Length: 174
Image (cartoon, rainbow, N blue to C red; front, side):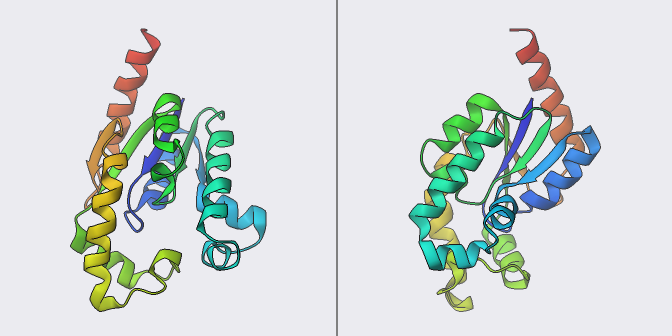
C-alpha cells in the first residue's frame, strides 16, 4: 500500500511525509529530491536548462515507477498531480492525501522558505499572493480529487493515519 501526499508548493508535503512514514514504518520518497539526486541538478536549474515540459515527463515517469513500491509514503511536487494523467494514476495506485492550506499561510511559508522554487523566480513578493491564488484555483481541481483532504495548518498526522487504516481495511475487504 502507498500513501501519496499532494498539495501546493510550501504546504509541508515533504515534512509531513517523513513524519508519517516514520510513524507507520513505511519508507519515504520525495519526488523532487529524487530527481535532484538522480540527475545531479536542482529543480530550479533543471527548469532553467531543460524547461518545464521535460521536467514534467521525467516527474511523471518517476511517479509511475514509484507507485509500484509497497509500504511507501510519496511526497509529490506541487504540480505533479496536475500534469499528464498523474492524479488519476495516484488515486488508482495509492491512498492520496491533499494537504490544503490557505493562501496567506502558503505565501508566508514561501516567503520564508530557503528552497528555490522555479515557478516563482519571476514573481515579486508583492505579486506572490495573486500568483498563488490564480495557480491554486487551477490546481485545486486535481488536488480535490484526493481520497482525503486535510488542513495543512496544524496538521494532524494521527488523523491521516487513522483515515489511511480505515481505507486499507475497506480495500482489503473488496
